[in-house]
Amino acid sequence: MDEKPKSISTKKGQVYINKHGILIQTYHENTDLTLEDAKADFESYSDLCKDCKLPVLIEMENVRSVERETRAYYSSEEAKNYITAAALLITNPVNRIIGNFYMGLNKTAFPFRLFTEKKKTIQWLKKHLSAKQKNGTKGSTN
Image (tube, rainbow, N blue to C red):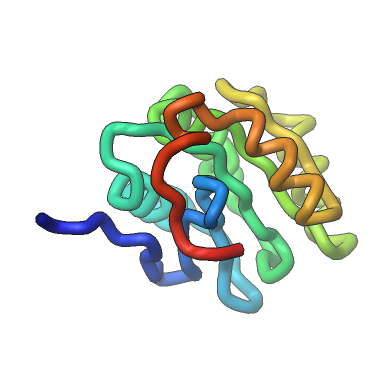
């Protein structure tokens, strides 16, 4: 029986499911996100969690910029096919600007928040797991 992957490397970072069942998206240093990257991210989410939706934590510390089309795609109805909620973990002033800009201009099809502390981010995202996911298989640690 094939076991589904717990971690996927993308061109600009890594996606994995943590021990709580939350998708974690990290990026390489000085990343500029494009629409192509967003589509690759969602493909990774789908590969990690076939036929299910999970909350996602996007760690923004290495992100320099996000194209307008990319922000729109992350907020789209299509995004709702992959995720139940999204949180941006912001760690510096540039991330805060990107996050606030995103929230101000893009209405998401799912719950969305900005956080500065990972622990609080995880606590909030855990509320957006289904009952089955809360009791199901866990991914890698973090």
